[in-house]
Length: 227
Image 1 (cartoon, one colour):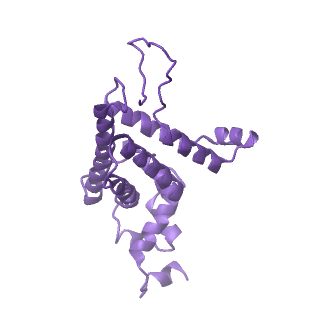
Image 2 (spheres, helix red, strand yellow; image 1 turned 45 degrees about the vertical axis):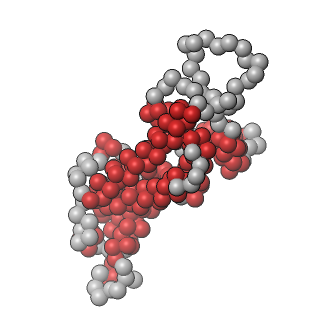
Image 3 (cartoon, helix red, strand yellow; image 1 turned 90 degrees about the vertical axis):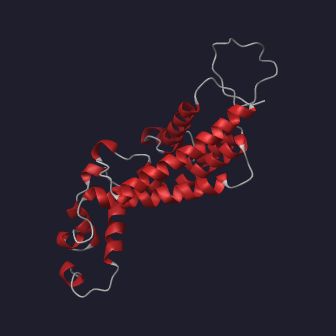
């Protein structure tokens, strides 16, 4: 059906079609490479129709970011409602992030590649919701790490805030692996999905146990381990 036909007397959920079209574009291109006209064409409508629902690109973009953020937060919140505490809770949160990246790879890439320099965060409802869920997700990780430091399962002189950044950076590097490194895995006969599974197994044993024969360590040395 033509764009003209679809904008006249249609009973389609038009707004949802725009959101779905925008999601396809924003998860496959950089933020700056997508325009409202692109979204309208992808959805099969005129740009004027799109502007009846979304006045600017940022609002549409944040609508999609918020969808992914809600899914991730629900996953994190479920982990935090269990009786697990400290290291067990931290591992559950780590596994939840791995599972999220596998089940929702497009949302994962979108959430961890937000171009903050191009977003004004104009104070709209979606912008406030995204910021709020982001802060709550970090809070769940922060409390789990604090519990680990408090009960001695993690011994490290780094602040919990720094540990969170290190863990998130590691995850971004793993799941957003450069194509060159993926090729290196392929050349080595290593399946990428198996690579992710193996990382999951590694995460199960994190932090590594201290070796009994390791001897005295210098006080200036920074380690993360559990007894």
